[in-house]
Image 1: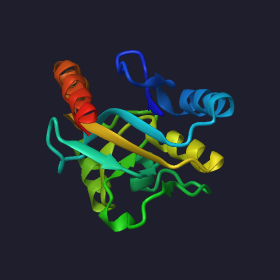
Image 2 (image 1 turned 180 degrees about the horizontal axis):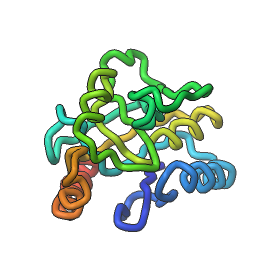
Image 3 (image 1 turned 30 degrees about the horizontal axis):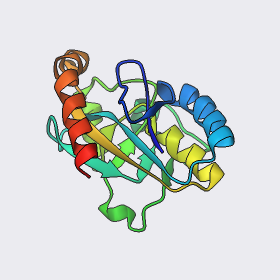
Image 4 (image 1 turned 45 degrees about the vertical axis):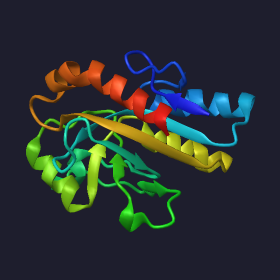
Length: 173
């Protein structure tokens, strides 16, 4: 089953499950209870912490949930903030999820130092729900922007072309 965030990120072949981790957790849980999918494949956009280029497409089975304040010792968490279904995490593009978009380039460097390359607001919740239901899961993401002060403007400028490219990528697979 293909799923996506929704609103401006809808695909004709995917079911929207919500924007941000909370909406995804609620809506995807409902979907899993009613539809009982055999496999989940999330498609969406991502911001790059610097190594991935605009319009790069990456696939992943690993997500983290790290907030920027983690890197300046402004917060801690008792939860396991990484989830993966990959056999070899060292080869994975780790997707960080937060309900906030990173706009500080210095923070981007901190994520890269932890081998985290892109951010997408929903993916961690997708993996956690899939894990709870024991459903195999993966995702594909297209980079629309860098995580810097121009993140939102670049996302808006690149969004239409990114959606077309990601749609073509999925249909060709």
